[in-house]
Image (cartoon, rainbow, N blue to C red; front, side, top):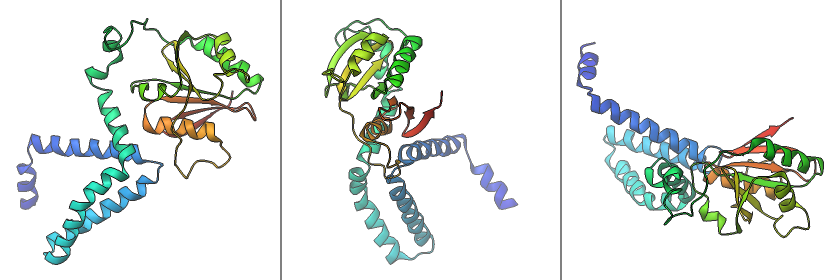
Length: 250
C-alpha cells in the first residue's frame, strides 16, 4: 500500500494530460484503420513494441537491441504502409483549424469565390432521390462536410448549381454527359459532377456491391464526407460514412 500511495502521489497533472493525449491519439489511429487491412499491421506493431519493452525490462540486451533496430528502421516503412491513413489523419486534424474553416474561407475571395452559405434543401434532395429510385437510375452523391474535397473535384467538371430535383435528374439521366461519376454537394449547391472517386481496397466489402459502392467507401475512408448511393439494379439507397454502410429501408 505504501508503494501504491507513493506512486499515486508522484502522478502530476501534467502526467494525467500526457496519458489523456496518448489515449486520444490511439483512439483516432484505431478509428482510421478500423475495417481496413491496416488494422492487422497496427496490431502487429503493438505486439512487437510490447515485446521490445518486455525484453528491455528483463535485460535481454541482444534481443532488445535487435528489436530496437527493427523498430527504428520500420518507421520509414510505416510511412509508406500507412500513407492513406496518415493523409486522412492530417485532413481530420486540419479540418479543426481556423485555416480550414469553411466559414472563414467563404468570405476571403482570394481563396474562394464569394458564395452564399446555406443549408441543404433536404426536401428537394429527397424528392430527386425518390424519382431516381422509382426509375432505377443509379446515382452517387458525396456530401462535403469539414474536410475539403477540392483534391477530387478537379477529376470532374466544376459546377455551381442550387440543388433541385430537375437538375439532379438531368445530371444522372443515362444519356447525360455528366451521369458517370459522383456529384459533390456542398451546402445547398452542387459544386462538381462526373467526379472520379478513389476506390476502396477494403477486402471486407460485400462482393455483391459494385464499383459505385466501392468508390463511396473509398472517399468516406479518406475524408469525413457522407456518400449516398442509389443502385440502378434494385433502386435501393445506401448511406456510407467513415467506411461503414447503412441501408435506407424507407
